[in-house]
Image 1: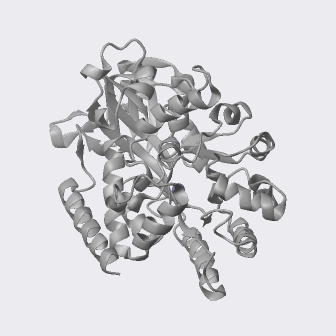
Image 2 (image 1 turned 30 degrees about the horizontal axis):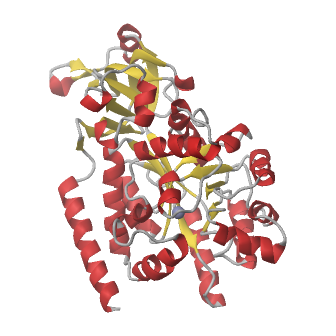
Image 3 (image 1 turned 180 degrees about the vertical axis):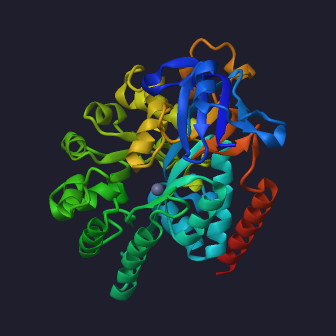
Length: 447
Ligand SMILES: [Zn+2]
């Protein structure tokens, strides 16, 4: 049985158009074979029958009463931070990192990272996310989880050199480059990698220059946090007399395949520069609001031609990995930032979470059309909070939640069917993560 059919639903097509259609997926290729009427889809799957169920047609996912959307893309997270969900809240970025998050992360073991990543993968599959970008450490463990879970990801080891001696700083850069070289193409090609300096202020210039040069040679993109808070922008302006995006260009970290998280405090010259360079920005509205970092100028970025994707950031500053929340927050905060209710409409938020996300990460997916990657989610619209359906795109941005997702498919494989995750043992994953988190907090307390 080569094919999977997604039947009876409405389908969100490129450009934001919604139409009633069935979808034929080629499971071996992991791609969409056809989108159209049942007859057209019948023709595409030919005589493919499933002998194991008495010769019935290809495996079917029922999308009746729902809308089929491209799998959502969480373009910036630190997935294992699910273990620190609700551990420390209600502080600005700098003291939150120094007083709470970094001391806890210092106690994290590779096994903890694996447990946290598994919990995050489970949460993402259950909320219709099929691809994510992850910056963290023990990335071989994260890669194992991505492989098992059936997701797609761009992974990188986050480098911090400030406060380290030269040997440790250099080892951190080397680790990130090694991860970028060795894990690229893993999980049957579903894993791609990037060189990931944490930010322009937490990695010193000489290491940035060296690491970026080697990443360019290896052909991997750069991902870092940029212009997140004024605390991060001001020292660069004071010390260098230039804005962070100009500095990024100077160290050759501003390329067309690169993607920067946040972009909150960017001025007009930086917005133009990002647009000209083709460097994507990953907007993380919930994290920016929770840490009171500021409001990213999403409308202006989009108008300048910047690819703006959406990210949850880590679960400790969100506090979940539900990209539906991000769509709603991006639309709402974008209006507030522009002082204009039309600034970031529903269709723009949905596009940021799908096509723009895939494009920012340089991963397949983000569109439902023949030949595209079969990364899909079916959102059930049959619920009180989604009734009536005047405009399904409005519902996706403003009213739907991750828990409305009925089925999730990535690379042609069904990861969740009727809300049951097939690739991970949900109960075991939750138990393991809860135990790991509780042990971690005990260790931090006694450290
Ligand atoms: Zn982050």
